[in-house]
Length: 153
Image 1: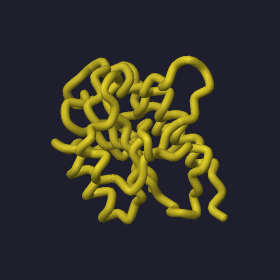
Image 2 (image 1 turned 90 degrees about the horizontal axis):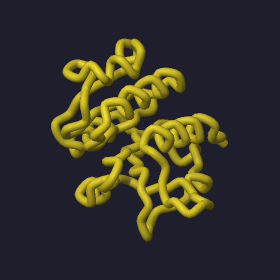
Image 3 (image 1 turned 90 degrees about the vertical axis):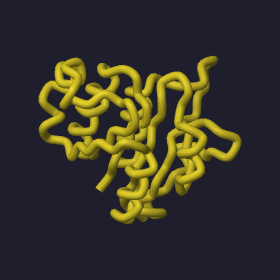
Image 4 (image 1 turned 60 degrees about the horizontal axis):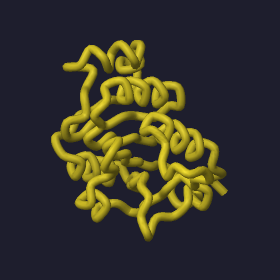
């Protein structure tokens, strides 16, 4: 099992896009803090195009609760963030752990510092242009696809 945890995502359209991508790549989705949900935001439903009914979707008040739930499921908890200690997505190996919960933070501020203290590792997408990050929808798609393609050997 693989899970995307969305922490404080502001855009309902980004959330709907991520849910739709998660469905296509067989990932589950966890929503935390004020991330909009398809149960209360029509824009999420409009963008996810029914995928919200097929994805294992759960809502948590706080990210720490979603992390606790993931750890009980024996998932490796990864924060998708650029820090001094983060490692490149290219260096991630699936043999480290077969299932993952990857946390994506707010479009402006990223993953909360308090959340970074709770994860097993922090991983970033290597960037070559002048920008240092992707849109959260693009980032989740890149991480999900890359993790799915990692060799288990």
